[in-house]
Amino acid sequence: MTDTAPPRADLAGRHIVLGLTGGIACYKAAELTRLLHKAGATVQVVMTQAAERFIGAVTMQALSGRPVTTDQWDAREPNNMAHINLTRDADAVLVAPASADFIAKLARGQADDLLSLACLARPIARCPLLVAPAMNREMWAHPATQRNVAQIAADGATLLGPDSGDQACGEVGDGRMLEPDDLLGEVVAFFQPKLLAGQTVLITAGPTFEPIDPVRGITNHSSGKMGFAIARAASEAGAEVTLVAGPVHLPTPRGVRRIDVKTAQQMHDAVLRALPGQGVFVATAAVADWRPAAPSETKIKKQRGDAPPSISLTESPDILATVACLADRPYCVGFAAESHDLLRHAREKRERKGIPLIVANLGPATFGCDDNAVTLIDADGEHELPRADKLTLARALVAEIARRLAAQPR
Ligand code: C5P
Image 1 (cartoon, rainbow, N blue to C red):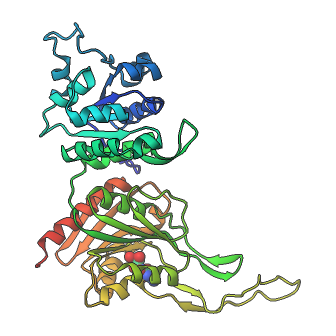
Image 2: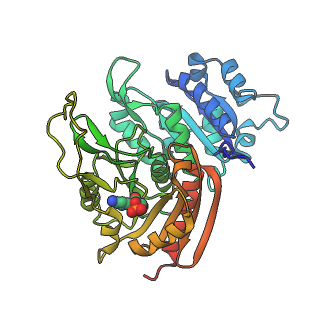
């Protein structure tokens, strides 16, 4: 048995038609192709004439491993219908970058080049259109573009971005194409089942840091990776997610509202402030059980010959137990990170905290790692989720939570 999870291939079996239109962001499409490919997708690149001015078809062919199509009159197609053939076995058409001109074409249903033809001719019910705009901020803000964007959205297209920031022209504002990594995340999220659509989920993650003095403190080895993975998975599943994070160095999952805190008390206060209206609370944070009762305002100095200082501790508020006691509590999920007698401790913890579901894992074996193995424990029994990377486990947990929510009496 291996103790590391196999790499995730989030787009395995997916076939993506990647359309490039004219814009300097074409250079990012090269990296995007590589990322889609690495995630397991097959990628068929289609380029407009304008796109070919910005990046070579040879580059895109090498990265996608397939000849690039550029011409509606491509005689290599046996039936001479490249625009039809392109989308018949595609899981999505992704236009990245999508220029203002191309979006205008989509809005009008114009079809005078291979890519716009393919978009119009795609089976609309089973081949979604994802559009990643890329243009100067004035072009993006122009009422004509905004009108066109609203029209393509009304026609069923999904807009990915745009981002805000520095632009190739030297201006700063809205209109940048999303970075390839973010686009990959959006495409992966698009294909996840929307099991928590309409739900609100509050999550705690990471360690807390309890100051002893301005330079020292009590903390633990929690990396926050599991909680951040759950936040991403819940957001992918369509939930509105708020993540209260202890001190960790992790990027915020796209679309997630993040509140940074340091101490257990701050985490407690942030959770209670964010709680109204939440449907689910998932407490993954490794909250310090004790904190120095009276942290020193100045650094405790070491004097030669002095005995070490004694630090008196007081108990931190139990955030999960507090939330689970409320009359209008959300569906509460706790974590038990134990070093031994895992299941016994986890069962006891579930009862003690008064929560419907607890996720048991071996703390020392998972802190900081990219994978984990957990057991879900609820009133009906135990259910193992075998070792996998944390995002895979988080998605499985989200599915389990969604199933339990659906079964709850209303
Ligand atoms: O009490 P214990 O740390 O063993 O329980 C773990 C579970 O309780 C986790 O879900 C953790 O996030 C939560 N917890 C909390 N506040 C605390 C201690 C733990 O929310 N002060």
